[in-house]
Length: 288
Image 1 (cartoon, rainbow, N blue to C red):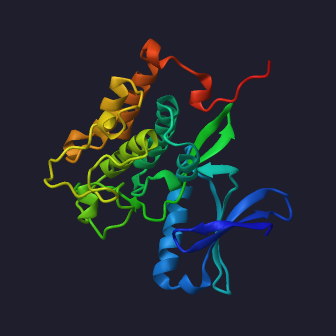
Image 2 (spheres, rainbow, N blue to C red):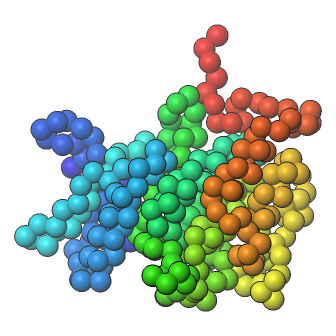
Image 3 (spheres, one colour):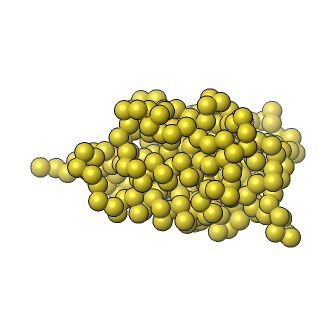
C-alpha cells in the first residue's frame, strides 16, 4: 500500500497500491472491518461483479476481488488520476455547455454498455463520474461505484423491478424514490440531472435536493429560468429537459436514443454566439 486515497460511500477505504511482482499501480478498495457482516459483504461483492461484467472504456476496470481467511474483503481496480465531477463543479462550475455535452455523451456510452448487460447503475451523480486525462482531453470520464446498481432491470416476466429506495436524493426520479417499479430510465433521469447541474449548479426540480413534485406530472424548471445567464443551444436544453421528465414514458426510452440526441446536438451547426472554443471542451492546447 502506498497511500490512502479516500473513503467510499459503501463503507470502504480506498488506497493506492503497487503490485509487488509486476509493478503496476492499482487502487485497492477495502471493506471496513466493522462492516464485514453478511449483508455488507454481499453488497460489496455485488458492486465488484456488476462493474467487472462491463467492458466500456468509460467504466472503471475491476481487476480482482479477494476475501481471505482473516475476513479481509477488498477489490482491486485500475488507479485513476484526476478528480470527480463533484470536485470539478465546486472548483470550476458551472461548466460550459460544450464540456457538459462531451461529459454527458461519455456517461451515456457507459450506460449503453451497462443496460445491454442488464445492469442499471441507480446512482449516477457528480461524485460517481471521474475525470482523467486521456486521448487529448482532461475530461475523459470513468463511471464509478456500482454498489447500489440493479442487475436485471426487469423481472423474469418482463415487469419493471422494485425494491428498497437506494440512490442519491435529487438524482432519483419519483418511481425510484417510491421503491419502484422502475427500470433503466432511472439512469437516463439521473444523467439528465447531472447535465442540468453541471450547467447551472442547480437542480431541475423546485424541491431542492429532493425530487418531490406537487403532482406526478409536474415538469422540471426550464434551464434558462434556473440560470438566465447560461448559454446553451436550444436543442441541448430540450434533450436535457426530456431526460428529466417526471413521467418515465416521456423520457428517452433508451440510453442509445439519448446518445443519438446528444450526438445530433454535437453535429449541428453552432450559432455564432456559441462559437466553439477548444478549451471549453476540456481539450489541452497544442504546443505552438
